[in-house]
Amino acid sequence: MECRIYGDRGVLLSSLSEAERSRLLHRVESGLPPACDEYVLGYDSILLIGAQTIAVQEWLEQTNEAGLPSMKPSGCRIIEVDYNGADLDSVAQACNLTVTEVIELHSAPVYTVRMMGFSPGFPYLDGLDPRLHLDRRSSPRDHVLPGTVAIGGTHTGIYSVASPGGWHLLGHTELNLFNLDAARDLDPDPARVFALTVGQRIRFQPMSTP
Image 1 (spheres, helix red, strand yellow):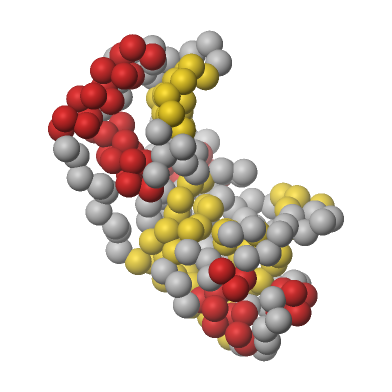
Image 2 (tube, one colour):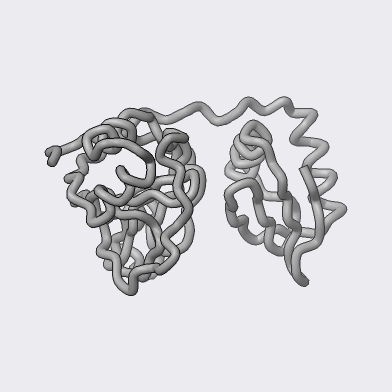
């Protein structure tokens, strides 16, 4: 783990193992370091905003001494997917698989929401079968619909809002990942704004096959 100053108001804890990240996430949700206003989760990092390096180092020592357990996995949420994506055939060809095999491999794992980013509510999901690891498209699309299930690199994800995108499109879900009306509340409740949370486990269930 690395601890360094980040900008003029932050301390970045980076190069975290999965176990370290889980322990620190448990800790920040229990109580932030002195003078820290908020935290931002990255794939293998946690940014503490407003904190001072010395205070963070003392807080880390207390965390290590406390022997906090890793966060327990949540229950697995099933998300139905209509595997009708525009890139199914090209993904199958690039991976030397049939379309049916692509769907089976993609829907078999239990995924973990590693982080949220790119757009509000977009989940980066760990657990993609290595046989489906592909570089992102060389030419991103200008418009991808919300609810689109896609793969890129070593991850799978779900587009939460209409946006450009360079991942390979496998299918679509009716799950609304980002509730704009709830986000406009004066004191928005994250549980109403976002359908998924960091650390949550999900599994895709095919609605149909080609």
